[in-house]
Length: 259
Image (cartoon, rainbow, N blue to C red):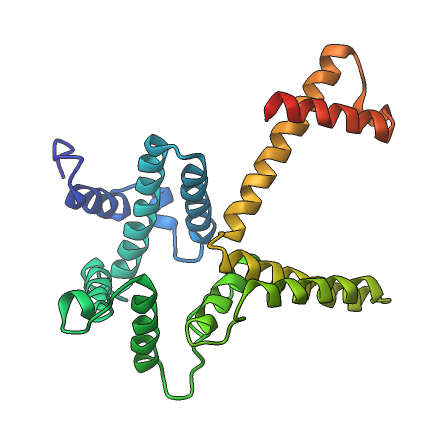
């Protein structure tokens, strides 16, 4: 294959991956399997999320390219092993998009996004096996907080949800009380899980992506703590030897510095 082909074309990327996996290609690429690339795929997904969180469109373009590489790579491995072709991947998602948007490609009416989601659940129910749960389609390997929001969102679309925020807030207070009363480690762990589950529900009801919100909080903590360490270096202090009150004063100073 000539590398003079247009690098902006999808077919060029497909050809490059095929060459890398070919008999005269790259030893590393030829050695890879679906299993060996699992961590790479997950890492690329998180890097896309980080670019989204940072609002960095230039980086997002690059990271989406890395994620696209993983999709084409897995498809090439599958083709090499006689499992399926890249065309099967594209046909599958294209067919699904048309089937699940009858309000666009068919005669079904949908007045707003909420009604689209209701129709979506009806369509997915028709696709599921008779005895399958509507929660089965949510990958259990998702981060726990994201999985919690996903399954709560699914049941809410069929009416299993609090009528208003007050009921959820009362439930949160109840869960805090049960956590405080728990005696054993096992019981505390169970109650803490219930507490997180309720927090995930509150976030979902307010359109807050709990994973994204926590990532942003983690980022702020990292920046502020890093600022505290910088203050210590500038002032000849050893952070670990400061009292808790002194550390807290540095924290407040870092908050003012970093915002």
